[in-house]
Amino acid sequence: MKRAVLVGLALLISSAAPAEEMKTPRISIAQVDWDAAAAKLAERPAGTTAEAFAKLNVTAEMGFPGIANSTVPVLLPFDVDGFAKDLAANPGQSPDKLSESVDHFMQSGFRPTKFFLTGPAGYDAAFALKLSDVSELSDIRYADPVYVLFSGLGMTYQLDGPALPEGELAKALQSDFPGIRRYLHESYIRYSFDRYGVTYVAAIYCLDTRPRSKILTCKQADRIMERFLRGLKLAGGTPSASLTVDALHLDRPKDESKDFTYFSPGFLIPNTGLKKDVGGRGDYTVYARLRFPLKEPPAFPNSQSFNNWGDCDFTGRSVRTPRRKDQPYSCKLNGRPLVFNESAPPNYSYPWRDNFCEHRRYFVGQCPGGEGHQGQDIRPGSCTLFNDGADRCLPYQHEVVAAHDGFILRARKQEAVYLFINTASTHARVRYMHMNPNQLDADGIVSGKLVHEGDLLGKVGNYNNGERGTTYHLHFDIQVPTKVGWVFVNPYMTLVSAYERLIGARGTEIKDGDAVPAMAGIPPVIQHPEPLTSVRGSAPQPQESAAVTTKPHKIAQKPQKKRHHVRKRGRHNAG
Image 1 (cartoon, helix red, strand yellow):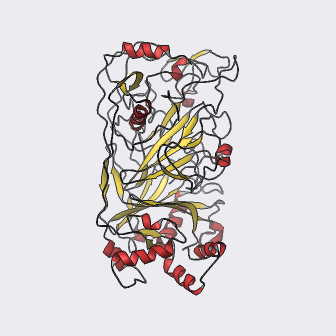
Image 2 (cartoon, helix red, strand yellow):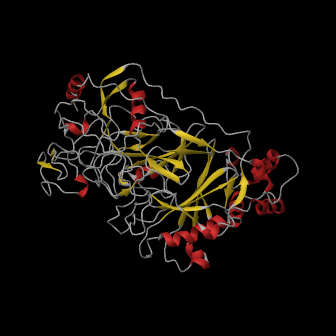
Image 3 (cartoon, one colour):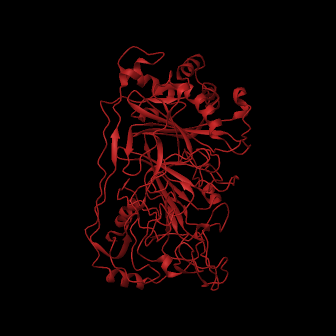
């Protein structure tokens, strides 16, 4: 697609104000008391604390490879001492027998999954429980396994946006976990406690509605969570003098791009926030030093719902059901002129626009109003139509790559791909959506796969519970760990930073008050987002049921919109 209009636009706004400086995240570091942890070992051998954990790691590694790489004490629902005695009594076990032995010494009926990641920032693990196998929980009619995502956090992120929820004391667990608190945030029940100077968080996806065989309620999840937590035991980790966080380098190119322009973070298309007078989240933080998730430039992050061919997120269109290519219509929220053509040039043009807090009914604590999109829509460099008369793009024309070295969390048949990052400077997870799940399965993009930055993950698609279920784009989001566990943060400036490195040039920011010519369907004046006020609690209230139940290693999509209370295949999220 020709982009001459882009160069013209860049020249016309060349007098725009210089970009505001990007920020690095604020991170708190755990002060680990390894001696206190060693004192709790049931079968502590003679020697130093380091020697005691080294011996523990040798045994635990057989069931949980890489456990020695954790910089915090590892708690798992696993009886490592019982496992060690079994190994001593039955040496030379085959791999199959060894796996059976690991399962036998798992606690409270939970089973390991293929997802267990350790590193400088701590560890993350997923565990499964089949309710029909546990007599105490057999009254819960939820048919699928329940998955718990459990993290030991060597670093936690201090966010500048709306306050995280305060939660409530989990009274039934205070004797075993002093100070443990229960949170309901972004559709997850989370239990957070501090031990040995480290924050540990367990999370289960749940829905507050009447119990059904395909829906796990949060009250039911509470019972499962209590069972999980009571089964935790020390299993490993490697003591160090102290944890440190390496600086995140925001090395911006010196040269300025002649065509790459972007609106400031938080500047949504006018009137496309949760409410008419609510804008976005103006967050300049770069949360990780990523490789841009599309292999080749150019790329155009913008709204796939409120641009040409978009459905206005079901908020109403001037033409209820456009049918012919290039038919004019508008979204009722703002009256902005649009055409029914996914390949229309404005969809594939600079400047970029943030849509993290755009109108969606997903819980996002960092957005004004507490709901939003959760991530950023990214269109690739061009659209190839199915044929001359078509209004839709042909999918799978552009490659999607790993944004960082990391560990995949995804079950077969699921649509979304999670990539977990655990380094001395970053603990984050990024999510990719709308690629073809069958192709992801064929390529082995499943839980437990290690990937390197730039590795091919898949191709941009329009898959959303089926082919052609959405427009041709990649959904990309970022979550970071906090005292209440993983939360969504605005990925926009992280993507700006990554894109500048990809093209080797610095972009031009279009800020509040800058004049923008009315070209290519771009509004002539930027509307500043409202201040971050009147933010609705960070936790959804019981009547605000979010969507569907989940499996942390069976990751796929954004949670289903809260106005729908039926389960759709692939509508899962992570804890």
